Length: 314
Image 1 (cartoon, rainbow, N blue to C red):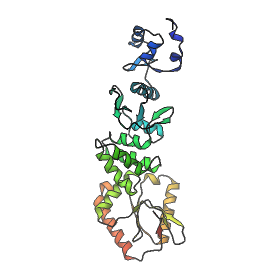
Image 2 (cartoon, rainbow, N blue to C red):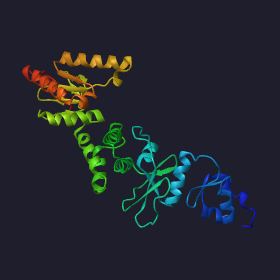
Image 3 (cartoon, rainbow, N blue to C red):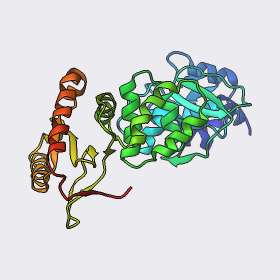
């Protein structure tokens, strides 16, 4: 290509983020790139060898594109930003851009990009045209780098509750992830494997284990003798037909939710089911009092004949 024709090249008219090597390949001199990326110039360097073809703040898509160019062909986005692209919402604010590259590739973390070399490079899913790790891998990759147990619990719970993946998928990813950074994710996964589906239910699961009461079931549908659905309690002790509901103020913030809860409780009463309602906050602020209430409600349920209700088959 003759010198002086590069300003009309499609590369400059179709992309906002490009590799410096690609600019040189279309005839842009190195000194021109340096001059244009200098303070006050029309371009800027996002990463070593990666150029943003305008001034001002790079947007999210441009940051992701720059990270992928840094990792080179075959790079896969993972972690929080991958989960955002999949549509998950219950996660902490993303920090750096987490990418996966083949283990043999010698590229290091730099700037806003966290590079992880891996023997298990996943087959990517395309989201908004970008290659992202499947949800189970992205969840575990994100969880391994978080230090707040509630953030890890919420992240994993949403992925299961909204059916982006199953607990078994998360367990398999954890088993393959090795030991680095997996202690907290393993602890967070335990109540989910038992059936809990939120941070509050995980707190309830831990408290029930402290109670010494018999084990039960989490989030299983309950039916009356005629096969009519009564409710799907957060926790269910089938032996004595006892339900435990973790009901938050937020869940009852509107009239429809309040009506649904009142109707649910009426069905419990009509079916002869003993139910205890607990605010999520009390699981942490008043755990001993909640334990006393659990034992009292359990004894009440034990003292009356078991009603003719059943849980859904596993």
